[in-house]
Image 1 (cartoon, rainbow over the protein chains, first blue to last red):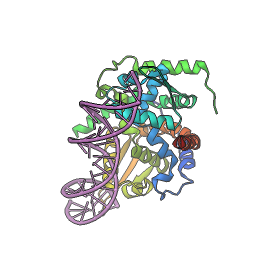
Image 2: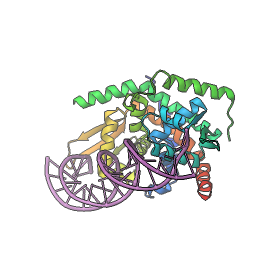
Image 3: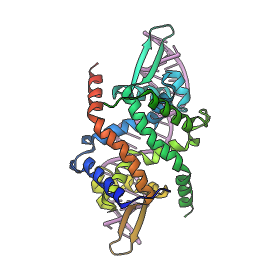
Image 4: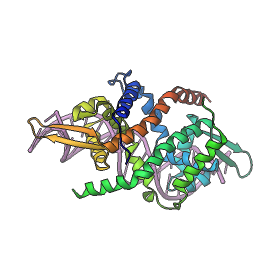
Length: 140
Length: 140
DNA sequence: CCGCATCCTCTCGGATACTG
DNA sequence: CAGTATCCGAGAGGATGCGG
């Protein structure tokens, strides 16, 4: 396991201070953009949608639905709409019959996916440890 | 805005392939550890709890409740329990009267917070753009 | 094929009151 | 002080059928 230097801890604290320090912590959550934006972007379904789009570059609705296994029509279209609104995803409809719709990451979305991936990779690496923790904890 | 090289995109795809490639996408979500672990760690409340603990190092229950503004007793204790189970947070109770309980990040939790922070910083930086997107989209 | 509309279920989460 | 217990409402999300 990686080790943590005191220096690193101090830098972390500085970063958090920069993030939270200037807001009055008594403010309602609506006024915290980080939380607001996070609630869209790091939603469980959205995360998977974005990663699969990062992988395939372009996906149609039903294809996406297959990869993001278990998602319902309703939730998928809901999430796509929000992701489009926030600028991560672009939607292109071809007026054929039957209609064809393609979803693609925007450049902005691509950047986000790269950040997100750093986190999910870390999680993937550490998930055995985490699941073991959880197991052990359950036994207490 | 940063630009994205084609090289970077290819690397991103490789990473995602490594993450998702080996699993059968038809498997039920329960079998995807990334998703499972993410649902705990990147929960909206958990994120805030972890960041505040990263900032203060040690916080008591009611102090935490003040900083994570708007969280209820129930949810706070729930989240803390799960975060403890997964190994991000340690709980220490002092048998005084009245009782005193202190929550601290574990070293593991500290590492996670650093990763998480990279993401939230990016979000903080880009939230004006995202909110503007959202606004514009609403007008269409 | 895309995805909205409907219905219905069920969990999450807020408020409050209470105990070791 | 640090939670647990209880109640309750809101809304997320699943299933299905239909329409463009």
